[in-house]
Length: 342
Image 1 (spheres, rainbow, N blue to C red):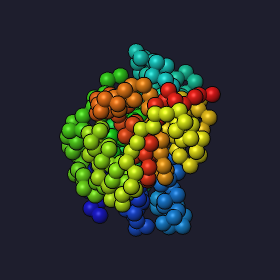
Image 2 (image 1 turned 120 degrees about the vertical axis):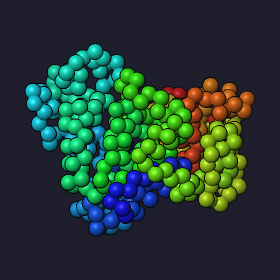
Image 3 (image 1 turned 135 degrees about the vertical axis):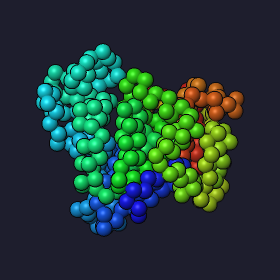
Image 4 (image 1 turned 135 degrees about the horizontal axis):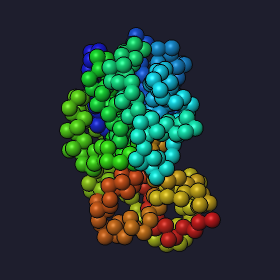
């Protein structure tokens, strides 16, 4: 692999992003694999162990914020900066809005605000030192869930585009359900339009929209539903399951689905309130199930009935897409009015 190759793979759900990245790992080069969520980091570690029998000494797997704190913040001494002891994950309204200097980044107790942690690194350590440190330890960097890098953290992706080591990004634009960071207007509209995102990433990376263009999870019936109803293009590499996605609207049918533990129930939010194996739409990213029931909130249900699901706001549409694309087989819909919470 060209040491300086920069590649951004725009994928679809279930196309094998993690598999492709893990298969790109080599025992002959020092590899860093970064991802956003703990669940995905665990999946990557399991896949590497399955391939090599262990995590090789030349391979490091890390979540984004662990990498920023342990690899970029802690090793450097910033003059006059108060001691940084941990990373804080406050709500947006809990981050000091008008603070200046180090108070903008570090709390009185010594916690660095996660949403400004890379801004701190960029401002006080600098791009040159960051890239030099990474290249000292790694020959290749792989980033999964790249679509979720937002706010100041997207600057890291742009920065890597200038590095003298190879970088591979993999992500599904329409699975952008959470930002790694969100602070003010920084990169606020980055994920509002696919063409804009392509253009921004394409400044530094060669775009690859072919390698992971087909889902190896979702059957053709589900892919067709997503394409026609949501306007998100996705093709299937699987055999037909023989079941069209269906909406159930009777209380009897709803009770049967909710009580069937072999069917994974996915709710818009507040999944723990329901007495069944339930998860929220956005939280199920990276997972697969044999049969999925997507429970529709009032807004989504009304748009479903009117054949206007493509009009969902972008964040809700992305979460709905994530939920629908979790199934390896049947896809069922229920209005939440038929499901009783505890």
